[in-house]
Image 1 (cartoon, rainbow, N blue to C red):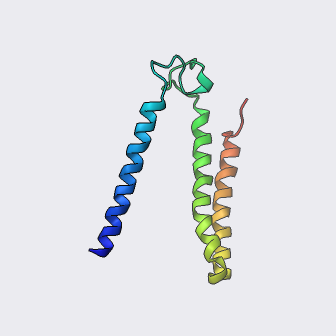
Image 2 (cartoon, helix red, strand yellow; image 1 turned 135 degrees about the vertical axis):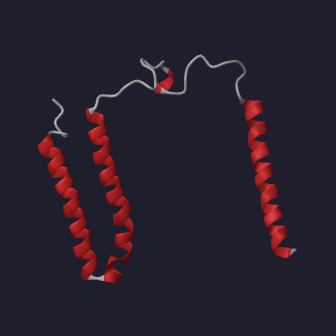
Length: 115
C-alpha cells in the first residue's frame, strides 16, 4: 500500500488544487456579462472567423509546414550527429538539398511573389 498511498495523496492534492482554483474564480470573477471579446484587445472583429483567405496563403502555409518539419527532423539529428559521424552529416545535407529544391521550385512558380 506504500507506493499507492503516495499516488492517492498526489491525486488528493491535485483535486484540492483544482477545486481551489474554481472556488477562487467564483469568488473573484466580476459579475455580469463582458461587453468586449477576449481577442484583438477587446475590439470587435471586422469579419467572421471562418472567412475565406486568398489562395496565396495556402502556398505560404505549405512552405511553413515544410520548414517546420525540417526542424522536427533536425533537433533529434543534432543530438546524435556526434555519435553517428560523417554519415549523419551527409544525410542531413541531402535532406536540406531536397528542401532547397522545393523552395527553388516554389520561387520559380511564383509562390513567393506577392504582387
